[in-house]
Length: 143
Length: 190
Image 1 (spheres, rainbow over the protein chains, first blue to last red):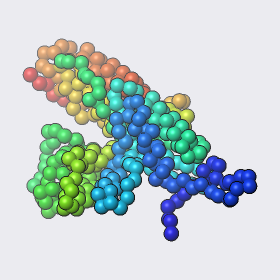
Image 2 (image 1 turned 90 degrees about the vertical axis):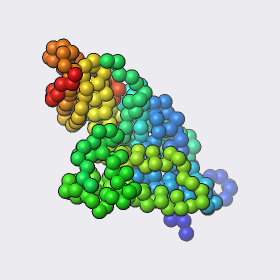
Image 3 (image 1 turned 135 degrees about the horizontal axis):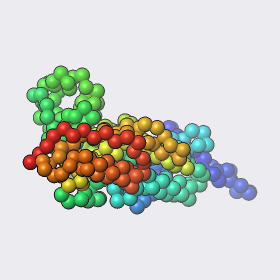
Image 4 (image 1 turned 45 degrees about the horizontal axis):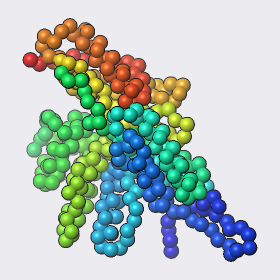
């Protein structure tokens, strides 16, 4: 039995004379789309998985080595379905050559657009934590 | 083995070094030889617990016929650093879900900005959220300890420059405002 939480997409119910059907989107799918969109946002160095995320990634790699499954990376992204609402949280490392606040807003927007475009889920709530600012991307005044 | 001083690498909020902890854990020393600080410090215990989990996971991977990725150790250290930074967040303005930036991440930026003033070496920097403005952006208080090069010039003038750079870095790099910036001149260097 599939225990993954899932949510109907916006056009879930089939219409017309065709067979009744429902499209279901699972958390890992939304997380993978969000991770891809966030990582491509200018000013984002990487998504930061944290300890639990690294353990999950190690498991993912081990499963791939064992030939059990090939799944998309979702490090640094947490997705929660609550009824019809979808919450997405991003943990980011950003560059210092752009304003961190602006980078976070851009990542928020990119993830919202990507998730809506690819799944039909409308208006996900995207929250962002900036865990590090990479100062190697700017130079101090030489002494 | 007690560890009392950190000279490089990432320091936990209590001042102890993460890289040192990792090296001792891998050597099997940390579990049996913790000093009084480490036994009672929540930061050391949390970091030690996280590193133990990851150490165990990577050992299991190392036993596999395929070697783990070379960058794995770096990723583990980065993950544990991230856990340490996950604590206090300063809110940033947003029209969507909440956005926050780690106080420790801000402290690194501000210390770096102060280091850019000729004749100044920034040391410890702490950041605390004082309030939130009408736009939803955090307003912070900063405490920064410094050493000055001996003979570099009038301290008052140099400290004013440090304050200006700290405020500018907070606004330009992070997007927040500094309400109070306390500087502690604690040493001179030749």
